[in-house]
Length: 192
Image (cartoon, rainbow, N blue to C red; front, side, top):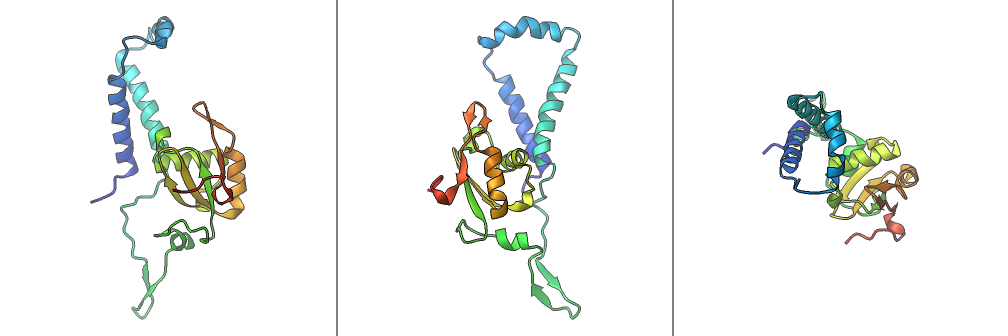
Protein backbone atom coordinates (compact mmCIF):
# COMPACT_ATOMS: atom_id res chain seq x y z
CA UNK A 1 0.00 0.00 0.00
CA UNK A 2 1.32 3.43 -0.91
CA UNK A 3 1.89 6.05 1.75
CA UNK A 4 -0.33 9.10 1.16
CA UNK A 5 1.41 12.02 -0.53
CA UNK A 6 1.61 15.43 1.10
CA UNK A 7 -1.32 16.62 -1.02
CA UNK A 8 -3.38 13.57 0.01
CA UNK A 9 -2.71 14.36 3.66
CA UNK A 10 -3.57 18.03 3.08
CA UNK A 11 -6.84 17.07 1.41
CA UNK A 12 -7.75 14.75 4.30
CA UNK A 13 -6.88 17.38 6.93
CA UNK A 14 -8.72 20.05 4.99
CA UNK A 15 -11.94 18.03 4.81
CA UNK A 16 -11.55 17.13 8.48
CA UNK A 17 -11.40 20.88 9.18
CA UNK A 18 -14.53 21.46 7.04
CA UNK A 19 -16.41 18.66 8.85
CA UNK A 20 -15.32 20.10 12.19
CA UNK A 21 -16.47 23.58 11.12
CA UNK A 22 -19.87 22.26 9.99
CA UNK A 23 -20.40 20.33 13.23
CA UNK A 24 -19.38 23.22 15.52
CA UNK A 25 -21.94 24.12 18.17
CA UNK A 26 -23.12 27.63 17.31
CA UNK A 27 -26.02 27.73 19.74
CA UNK A 28 -24.22 30.16 22.02
CA UNK A 29 -20.79 31.46 22.86
CA UNK A 30 -18.51 34.44 23.24
CA UNK A 31 -18.33 34.87 19.48
CA UNK A 32 -21.86 36.31 19.45
CA UNK A 33 -20.58 39.70 20.60
CA UNK A 34 -18.54 39.91 17.37
CA UNK A 35 -21.36 38.96 14.99
CA UNK A 36 -22.45 42.54 14.20
CA UNK A 37 -18.88 43.50 13.27
CA UNK A 38 -18.45 40.32 11.21
CA UNK A 39 -21.71 40.92 9.36
CA UNK A 40 -20.57 44.45 8.58
CA UNK A 41 -17.16 43.27 7.29
CA UNK A 42 -18.72 40.56 5.12
CA UNK A 43 -21.67 42.63 3.87
CA UNK A 44 -20.17 43.04 0.37
CA UNK A 45 -18.77 39.49 0.13
CA UNK A 46 -20.96 36.72 -1.24
CA UNK A 47 -21.16 33.20 0.20
CA UNK A 48 -19.10 31.61 -2.58
CA UNK A 49 -16.23 34.04 -2.09
CA UNK A 50 -16.23 33.38 1.67
CA UNK A 51 -16.01 29.64 0.96
CA UNK A 52 -13.16 30.23 -1.48
CA UNK A 53 -11.28 32.35 1.04
CA UNK A 54 -11.71 29.79 3.85
CA UNK A 55 -10.59 27.03 1.49
CA UNK A 56 -7.57 29.02 0.32
CA UNK A 57 -6.43 29.91 3.83
CA UNK A 58 -6.84 26.46 5.36
CA UNK A 59 -5.66 24.36 2.44
CA UNK A 60 -2.61 26.57 1.86
CA UNK A 61 -1.74 26.31 5.56
CA UNK A 62 -1.77 22.50 5.38
CA UNK A 63 0.09 22.52 2.07
CA UNK A 64 2.93 24.62 3.51
CA UNK A 65 3.63 21.93 6.10
CA UNK A 66 4.06 19.29 3.40
CA UNK A 67 5.45 21.22 0.44
CA UNK A 68 9.06 20.17 1.07
CA UNK A 69 8.26 16.68 2.34
CA UNK A 70 9.91 13.84 0.48
CA UNK A 71 7.71 11.41 -1.43
CA UNK A 72 7.89 8.34 0.79
CA UNK A 73 6.59 6.14 -2.02
CA UNK A 74 9.72 6.54 -4.13
CA UNK A 75 11.53 3.26 -3.90
CA UNK A 76 15.26 3.51 -4.34
CA UNK A 77 17.74 0.68 -4.44
CA UNK A 78 20.50 1.62 -2.03
CA UNK A 79 22.81 -0.74 -3.87
CA UNK A 80 24.82 0.98 -6.54
CA UNK A 81 26.30 -0.96 -9.44
CA UNK A 82 29.90 -0.44 -10.41
CA UNK A 83 31.31 -0.79 -13.94
CA UNK A 84 31.80 -4.56 -13.65
CA UNK A 85 28.13 -5.05 -12.81
CA UNK A 86 28.92 -5.90 -9.20
CA UNK A 87 26.68 -4.48 -6.54
CA UNK A 88 27.94 -2.88 -3.42
CA UNK A 89 26.06 -1.86 -0.31
CA UNK A 90 26.23 1.90 -0.07
CA UNK A 91 23.66 4.17 1.54
CA UNK A 92 22.74 7.10 -0.66
CA UNK A 93 23.90 9.62 1.94
CA UNK A 94 25.39 9.77 5.44
CA UNK A 95 21.98 10.93 6.70
CA UNK A 96 20.37 7.72 5.39
CA UNK A 97 23.06 5.67 7.08
CA UNK A 98 22.51 7.46 10.39
CA UNK A 99 18.71 7.36 10.57
CA UNK A 100 17.38 4.20 8.91
CA UNK A 101 16.01 1.82 11.51
CA UNK A 102 17.90 3.50 14.34
CA UNK A 103 16.56 3.55 17.85
CA UNK A 104 17.24 6.29 20.37
CA UNK A 105 20.46 5.17 21.93
CA UNK A 106 22.33 8.28 22.99
CA UNK A 107 25.44 6.99 21.24
CA UNK A 108 24.32 7.63 17.69
CA UNK A 109 26.14 10.92 17.25
CA UNK A 110 22.99 12.91 17.92
CA UNK A 111 21.93 14.87 20.96
CA UNK A 112 18.43 14.00 22.15
CA UNK A 113 16.10 16.86 23.10
CA UNK A 114 12.87 16.69 25.06
CA UNK A 115 9.95 19.05 24.43
CA UNK A 116 6.56 19.21 26.13
CA UNK A 117 4.58 19.30 22.87
CA UNK A 118 2.94 16.31 21.25
CA UNK A 119 0.06 14.97 19.24
CA UNK A 120 -2.52 16.38 21.68
CA UNK A 121 -1.28 19.82 20.65
CA UNK A 122 -2.53 19.07 17.13
CA UNK A 123 0.82 18.12 15.65
CA UNK A 124 1.63 15.42 13.14
CA UNK A 125 5.29 14.60 12.60
CA UNK A 126 5.50 16.74 9.48
CA UNK A 127 3.76 19.74 11.05
CA UNK A 128 5.86 19.39 14.21
CA UNK A 129 9.03 19.23 12.13
CA UNK A 130 8.01 22.38 10.26
CA UNK A 131 7.12 24.13 13.54
CA UNK A 132 10.48 23.46 15.23
CA UNK A 133 12.43 24.34 12.09
CA UNK A 134 10.50 27.60 11.67
CA UNK A 135 11.05 28.51 15.32
CA UNK A 136 14.78 27.74 15.28
CA UNK A 137 15.77 28.74 11.72
CA UNK A 138 17.68 25.45 11.41
CA UNK A 139 17.78 23.16 8.38
CA UNK A 140 16.11 19.74 8.54
CA UNK A 141 19.47 18.09 7.75
CA UNK A 142 20.59 18.66 11.37
CA UNK A 143 17.75 16.48 12.65
CA UNK A 144 17.59 12.75 13.14
CA UNK A 145 14.60 10.84 14.40
CA UNK A 146 11.54 12.46 15.98
CA UNK A 147 9.48 10.40 18.42
CA UNK A 148 6.09 11.90 19.32
CA UNK A 149 3.72 10.95 22.13
CA UNK A 150 0.49 12.63 23.20
CA UNK A 151 2.02 15.27 25.46
CA UNK A 152 5.76 15.05 24.76
CA UNK A 153 8.27 14.55 21.96
CA UNK A 154 11.92 13.65 21.62
CA UNK A 155 14.10 15.01 18.84
CA UNK A 156 17.50 13.80 17.70
CA UNK A 157 19.67 16.70 16.57
CA UNK A 158 23.31 17.21 15.70
CA UNK A 159 25.06 18.34 18.91
CA UNK A 160 26.34 21.50 17.21
CA UNK A 161 22.72 22.64 16.63
CA UNK A 162 21.11 21.45 19.87
CA UNK A 163 21.77 24.54 21.97
CA UNK A 164 20.53 26.84 19.18
CA UNK A 165 17.23 24.95 19.01
CA UNK A 166 16.82 24.98 22.79
CA UNK A 167 17.49 28.75 22.93
CA UNK A 168 15.02 29.38 20.11
CA UNK A 169 12.15 27.30 21.51
CA UNK A 170 12.49 26.88 25.31
CA UNK A 171 10.32 29.39 27.18
CA UNK A 172 8.24 30.43 24.17
CA UNK A 173 4.46 30.08 24.23
CA UNK A 174 2.33 27.79 22.11
CA UNK A 175 -1.43 28.30 22.35
CA UNK A 176 -1.09 29.92 25.76
CA UNK A 177 1.19 27.23 27.18
CA UNK A 178 4.88 27.65 27.96
CA UNK A 179 7.11 25.38 25.88
CA UNK A 180 9.76 23.48 27.78
CA UNK A 181 12.67 22.11 25.73
CA UNK A 182 15.92 20.73 27.09
CA UNK A 183 18.54 18.03 26.71
CA UNK A 184 16.72 14.76 27.42
CA UNK A 185 19.82 13.14 28.87
CA UNK A 186 20.41 15.84 31.47
CA UNK A 187 17.23 15.09 33.38
CA UNK A 188 14.68 17.00 31.33
CA UNK A 189 12.71 14.32 29.61
CA UNK A 190 13.03 10.69 30.37
CA UNK A 191 11.53 8.48 27.72
CA UNK A 192 9.02 5.92 28.98
